[in-house]
Each structure stands twice: as C-alpha cells, then as structure tokens.
Length: 82
Length: 203
Figure 1 (cartoon, rainbow over the protein chains, first blue to last red):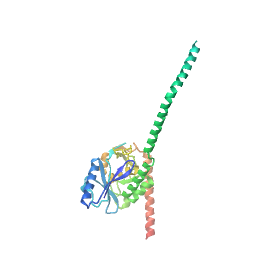
Figure 2: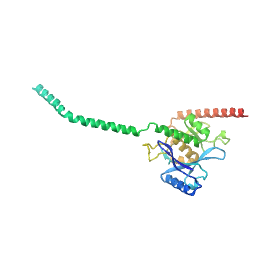
Figure 3: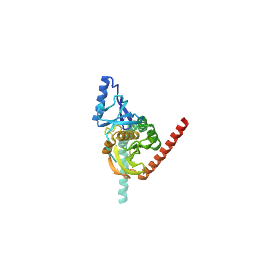
Figure 4: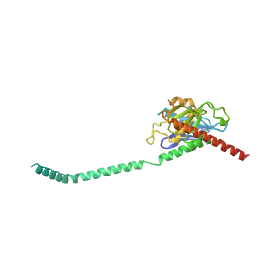
C-alpha cells in the first residue's frame, strides 16, 4: 500500500509505502496515516466497484481503509472559496 | 553680479562632483554587483518547468483514479461530470439522475439539471495547502479536479457543506457553462455512436 499526498507545485508525493500484512510496516503506515490527518488532510481511497466502475471512498480512520487498497490519497481539507 | 555668482556656483558643483565621484563610484559598483547577485539567486531558485511537471504528474494520477470515459471527458472537454444522488446516468442502465455537477479546475463546481440544462448553483470550494511548499497553496489543476471528484463522488454532502453556495452565474459565466453542457451532450452522443459501431463490428 502506498500513501500519497497531493502537493502544490509538485503533484503527488510518496508519504509512506509498505505491506499491511507485515506488522512493522503496517505500524509505520498507520503512523504516517495519522500524521497526515493530524496535519488537516482528508484521505481518500480509490476503489473498483463491483460493476467495474472506479470510485473513491473517504476515510477518517485507519480501520476504514480496505486491507487490499493499493493507495490512500491525502489532500488538503476542503474550504469554502471564491 | 547674479550671473557671476551663478557661474561660480556651477563651477563649485562641478569641482565638488569631481572630488566626490571617485568615492561614490566603488559604492555604485558594489551596489550593482549585489543586485546582480540577488537576481542570480532568484533565478537559481526559479524552475519554470516545475508547475508543468506538477500538472503532468497530477494528470497521470487523475487518469489512474477515474474511469476511462471520465478521463476522456476531462482530456477532451476540460471538465468532469459527476452525477448527483439520482443515479449514475441512463447510459449505465440506471434511472436518470435528477442533477449533476460539472467540475472545473480551480473554479466553482456547478450543479445543473441534465434534462433541461438549467443551472442550479455554484459551490465554491478550494483545497488550500497551508504549508505552501513552493510559495503557493494551490494544488495543480488536475489534482484540484481529482480532489473534487473523490470528495464529491464519495461524500457529496460533506463537500457541499464545506463549500460556499452561490446562485449560478456569480463566478462562472452561465453562457459558457451552458455551452459546455451542450458540448458534453454532443460528446456523449458521439461516444454512444462510436460504442454502437464498435459493438456491431465486434459481433
């Protein structure tokens, strides 16, 4: 699983990468995940729906991240603009 | 008398400049060198291709996350359509949705009625990165679109609650949006026709 974060002037950057099946690596992923949320990021997981369509789900906790997810994408929290 | 005083004054100024100039000239040279060095430092820190590379990276990420037809829509038209809670669209075999959104990069999300092309409202939403890694808080354009797409398709209510709601036409030109809706309808028809032709050819 890879944790990616969108960055201005750069595009996505790799925050962390690891195998959730390996305890030590999962622990590092969880720490990185929580650090991003603590920084005010929103987290989304791109998924493939049963009908084959791509979709995304927003996650607020590590337990919400599907174990087989390939990526978690962080982006800054939405704010009213204009 | 006055003319003589004037001439004397002028001579005095010229002589004074002659005395002062040798002292001022090195200082001016130093100042010029400092300005040149400063400009060189600014240029060294400036990467004209950075934003372009960031956008290219963001486009690849967007492409890897959205459906192929959504990607082609963005590539061809410059915006994405997301159906409202009413369904995913008649082409997918679902009930026709009652409304949809158009997602533009760094512009408000526009809600509209697909059946009538009536514009409903604008939702102004941004994803500002307070760390400003390169001086700007704005995501690359395609990252902005992907963030809106993920947030809107996954949790429509949450995103809308965080947006500023305005009547249609406040930020985005309504005529331009209607033109985009018409382009989108043509694009949909052409794709359906192409798919029909492909299906016939395959069978």
